[in-house]
Image (cartoon, rainbow, N blue to C red):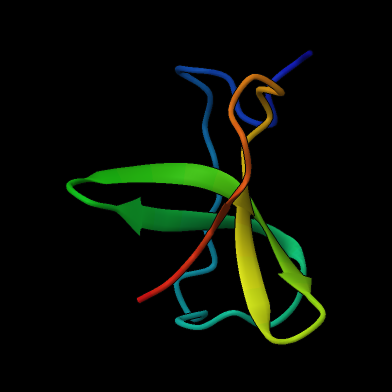
Length: 63
């Protein structure tokens, strides 16, 4: 699968967004790392972080 953003490519980020607004692609802070991930809202108020790599299971985002 082709990644959403390849290493070394320029990515434009809307820095005015500081909260989840809708399903989409976000720059997220995961520990000490920033990653581009798909965020998906699921019924019941659950928010999942999804990777382009199918081998990486989606996980629920909790604060």
